[in-house]
Image (cartoon, rainbow, N blue to C red):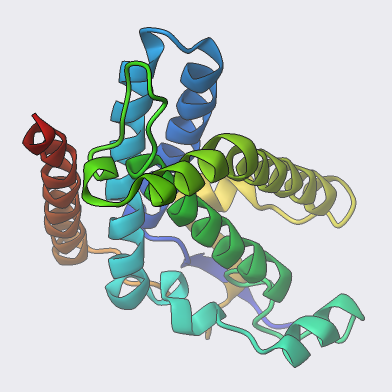
Length: 226
C-alpha cells in the first residue's frame, strides 16, 4: 500500500469561487422567480456572476495546478474509458473526466446565461446594459433564450450536479464536499499539490479586483442609454 498524506488539491481562491458562485446562482433563481423590485438584485447578482466567471477563466490558466483547465481537459476517449470503468490513477485527484465535462458545460451555460441577460429587455422596467448596443432582433433572441431556455438549462445542470455528488458520496463513498471546504485530500505523497500560498492568494485577489472592475464597467454602460 502506498502511504497517503494530506495534499492540497483545491486552493483557497478556487474554493471561494465555488461557494460564491453557488450562492449567487441560488440568489439569481430566487430573485427571478420573485420578480418586481427583486429584479434590481437579480441584476446585481448577475454582475457578481459575471465577475466570478471572468475570474475563473483567468484562474483556469494561472491558478493552482488542479484548478487549471489543461489539467482536466480530457479527450472524449478518456471520458469514454472512465464511464466504462477503465480509470486513470489521476481521475480521482482533481476533477474526474465526467466531473470535468460537467464543469465545462456548466461554465459555458452560465456564460451564455449572463451574456443573454446583458442583452435582454423585458420592455417594461428592466433592460440589460448592452441591450441598446444591438438590434431589436438580437435583443428579442437574447431575451427569449434567457427567460425560456437558459434558466432551465442552468437549473437542470445544477440538479444533475447535486445528484452526481450524492451518487459519488453515497454510493462510491468518495469525499467530494470536504475537499472543497478545506482544500485537502488523502493521497499518495508523490501527488503534485496545488500552490496555495500567500503570493498566489494575493494574485487571485488582484485577478478578482480586475474582474469586478470589468463587471462594474459593463453595468455602467446602462447609463449611456439615457
